Structure formats: structure tokens, C-alpha cells
Length: 457
Image (cartoon, rainbow, N blue to C red; front, side):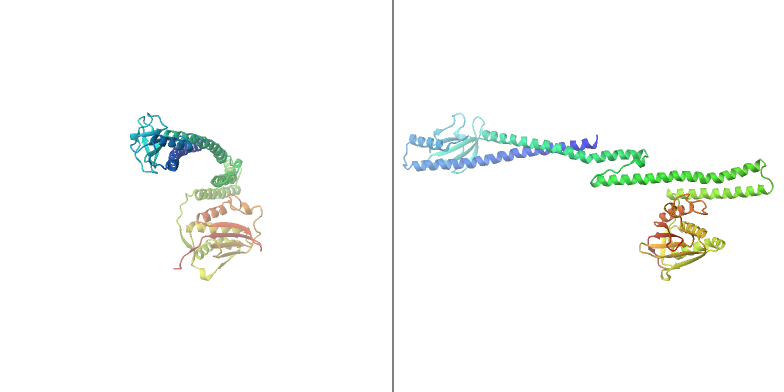
């Protein structure tokens, strides 16, 4: 069942339950209220009639017939509605009654003190509310009203209240339908966009405008689709670039191998062809190795052995490894590290992988530097910062946004995977890597890592 129907059914059930409970409560509250109000009114009527009898009955020995006449006049004067009166003498003999004899038995009416009220039951099972008061002549005036008449009034008023409640309930239900539809509509639209994601149509996903948590989810889905689309584009480019990079050495290897086999190359050409085959095979091996490493780093399959690597040791070992390339290219490295921080600033990551990442960056700088590479390291505002700057021609502006992507090569580049591997390793260690052209000229690669201060041994 759809969420829209589930919410509407749940609200309808809750509404019916609340209205039912409200109706039951109203029934008993109204009934009790009317009974109490009727009792008070009957007491006031009884006292008023007794007062009238007292005013006109100053003679102590008033005949019964005169007493009855005065009582009838007093009852008539009160204009009793839905109330009956019974007048008895001191011996409980009925002198006057507005009831039929079969309607009530006097034995069922308790003897009350003036001002008190009670509920009595007649021989027919009818319940009465009674109020009794004594009269000056020694008799008792009892007022009665059937509870059934009060119930009729209460049921009439309750019926009107039910009409109002039902009308309000229907209006509330219709409003809930409108509000629920308004709330569910973004979810229905979001479902359509999620189906686009399922069908890998990431570029077609639209941002659904909504409020609250639904809006947050819609925004997350839109951003997720954007990231997936970007990743999808990168993957397609990777496959295209990989196929191109692999095809080039394979064509060279295949061409020279076929030429040697068919006797096209002779003498020194055969030796030269074999050298090219060996060179291209080595290049092909490097490409496959680096592609495999990247795949493992992206899939977190590469085994990492994290440890604390001091910044100074990391830089010194990198310079030692890269020294043959520096000598070959006649490039020198100048380092700058605050003496007080030497041996204290440490990076938490895999030492071998971190060394490979820095070697890739420094070797790339060595190929483009004219004479000098500056390595500056220390504590920055956002963590441990490491800067590698060369005095070369810099990075072409159109290449900067894609420098760390796979198979993106600059001038004299090899596989185009070195900086992509460096980025993957740095990010696996919790850091960030970025590139820019220095204002004074040359390219600058910056690495930023979280602070891990290790006490010097």
C-alpha cells in the first residue's frame, strides 16, 4: 500500500477513535450536568412553593381542602415544566398530585429533610429525581421529574454536538488529505529521480524542492547523482585513456616483432627493434602495475600498515631515493623545516605508500625544474603542510583542474598515473593534495595532513 493511503487511513482511524471517545465523554458529562442543574432548580422550586404556602397559611389549623387549593395555586404559579408535584400531610397521605397513581408509589420516595434530593424508582421502573421540603402546615411537598426527560434533552443536545463534531471531522480529514498530498508529492517526485539513478541516468536527475527532512534527502540525492555522474564520466575517460595508453606500446611491440619475424629489419635494425620492444614492454608493465595499484587504492583493497612517520625522515628518505634523477637533470633540492619541529611533527600513514606518493611528486618536479626544487614543511593553520615548488615553466592553466586525474600527462610525462596515485595515497592517509602555479613562477604542489605530534625519541 502506498504511503499516501497509509497516512490517510491512519489519520482517519485516529479521527474516528477521538470522535468516539469525545462522544462518550460528552454523553456522561452532559447527563451529569443536566441532572445536577435539574436538582438545584427543583430545590429552588420546592422552597419557593413552601414560602408561598407559609405566606398564605398563617392559620395553624388550615383545613386539608384549603391546603390543597393553596398548593394547587402555588404549583400553578411556578409554571413547572417537566416537573410534577406531590403534596402529603403529616401521615404521608396524598393530598394533591400531578401524577397518575400508577406512575409512582410513595413508598419508593424516601423521606427527605428540607433541601435534600434523591433518586427514586417507581413500580414501572421509571427513575425520578426528587426534591422534598416541609410546609408550615406539617405536610411535605415533593417535586419529581423523570430522568428519561432529562436524557431526551441531553440526547438532543448531544446529537447537535455530534453533527458539529462530524462536520469538523470531515473538514479536518479533507484538510489532512490536502496536507498529506502536499507532503507526499515531493516523495513521489523523489521516487522518480531515484529511478533515474537506478537506470544510471545521472545527468537527468533534477533537484526536488521541498522543506524539512524531505528537502535534505532530495538535496542529498541530487548531490549523489552529480557525484555518480562525475565518477561515471571519469570512468569512461579512464577506459578511453587506458585503452589508448595500452594500445600505443602494443602497436610498437607488435610492429617490430612482425618486422623481425618477416625479415624486414636486418643488422642493427633488428637490435634497435628489440630494444624498442623491451622498452615498450617495460613501459607497458609500469602502466599495468600503476593501474592495478590505483584500482586497489580506490577499492581500499591495498593493504595499509599505518605508523607514525616523522616529517624530517620522510623528506630525507625521499631526497636519497630521488638523488640519481637530480644528478642526471642537474637539479638541487633546498629544504626548509623549523629546527624546533624536526623529529616532532609526524604523519600517521603507511610509510612505504607515503614515500611513493612524495617520490612521484618530487620526480615530477625534477623533470620540469630548471635548477632548483624547494621543499618547505612545518605546522600550518589547518595542520601539517608540505610544499614542493620548482622553478620550471609551471603548469598549463587548462591542465590544472585535471592534474590529479588518471592519464593526464604534461610535457615529458610518462604514464600519467603518478600524481593520481599520489592523490589516492594522501587521501587514504587522511590528507589533501592540491596544485597551483606560484606567483614567482614554477609549479607548486601542496600536501596537507592532520596534526600528529610525536615526542622525539
